[in-house]
Figure 1 (cartoon, rainbow, N blue to C red):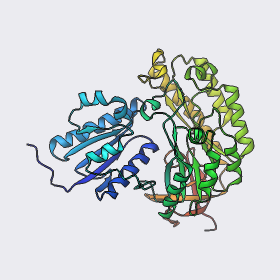
Figure 2 (cartoon, helix red, strand yellow):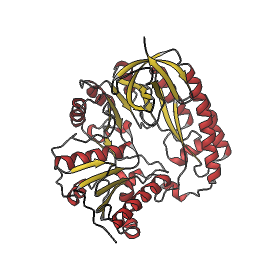
Figure 3 (tube, rainbow, N blue to C red):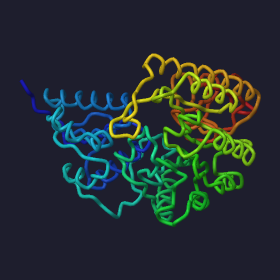
Figure 4 (cartoon, one colour):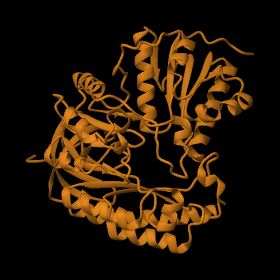
Length: 435
């Protein structure tokens, strides 16, 4: 028998997918709180909002499974209402409405006012920069643009997020000032494509100017760049990185592949020679820079020769950070017209081979850090360890510095000088300097 939930009206926001979704959930929660709604993040609530991801097969599967899980809870009376928003809902709304009709309502990526209305709240335009952050108090994401104008053959993001739309510099500075007032010390800039920033508003790539303005905000000590696109990279960004101590010597630049035939089919607008030259310029202008990239293996038509070119290039470039994904055949993308002709087992084996190469590189680079001292920010305590990061490491995806809490005390949220005492392939161990 269905039992009606007797909990008070609490809205539980569940976030799936990338940091852009984290940001969107935080904005939604800020609006709800301003409407005096009781709101929690991934806790108990009788009204559930699921912010979904629709990027690749694994992410879509996780999103669908999460929706089904909460629909079951609704049917059993554990929750009263289930709403779905985000990329999966934007991309597949008619299909989802047919296949999972017990969801109360589906919303797309730009439907925030309508979602708020369904939750009994008003969209407050004056709340620029107001959000309920869900990350540790010392860092926060800053989304500087929405959407993407790039024509990459494998990517469905323009279908879900629309065309590139930059936020004005003054709006981003105001948002940063509010974050700093809450104690945020590290700002992680995110967008589908950071390097396109400003072209729509200012008729020029304006990321360097934005960085200069954000660096002036008191309280912000680190500014980190995520998701830069290699084609048309604005080199003045490197000048700001070199001159401004607040800009971390770090960049996340997804390169996807390096074999020329694959790059051409992917519609990346670059070549192996151009990409290699760009990275050499990075190293020359900012020698201390940590470069993170992501690669795709198993793209349609990827031959063993293409893969070996990629593998040898990874060995040659010695990236500080690298992630590797297997190709996902996505409807309504340009590459969907190609035959997905690399077997799943081959895709997975190739990804494993790349990560084995990277693991060895990372181990060697980490051994060089032993005995050196790094300024680190302490994110959290986990078991017997305080967990921190250097400026060369982003949360959740990169190396961490572990400090034995049984022997040393460091304050969560603070910057601490740590001496590296041990290193594995993806983790460092350290102690407070002069301890």
